[in-house]
Image (tube, rainbow, N blue to C red; front, side, top):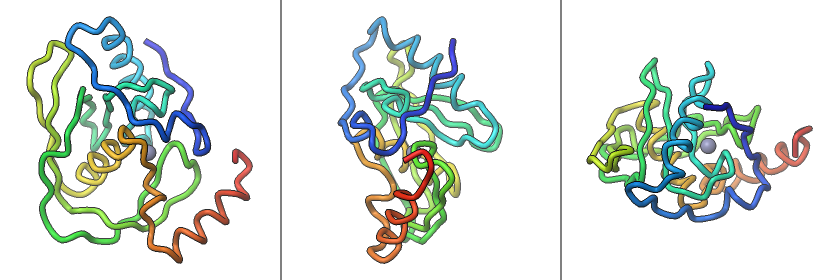
Length: 163
Ligand code: ZN
């Protein structure tokens, strides 16, 4: 197990569509270990594989003390009208911007043995599930900000010391 370095906005791996993981893929167990180890640091809510430089479909989460992972996640269901919520991302450190998310979400996928699993929740869990699936499709949350917010966000990000 190892805590991995987080890739930052501008790294092409964050724009890549991640590949499905086959059951028995020898890379999967190590990837899940690294995702869990890296997300369990206090203040972290979710982590997608491409954020640690691996182009495979898996993410981990750490919400209200509940830590877990999903392989080959699919956003199976969302409920409720979208609402503006403040959002942040480990790959865009130091910033939070409001964007629209559904207040409830359910993700389906598999565990390391290929058994079906699902994770669902409201609030921060719902937000994290939507956010992480977007990552695996090569999307960052700042892409979907309202136009004026996005313009200001990009201005601030370009001034960030890490950019
Ligand atoms: Zn993120």
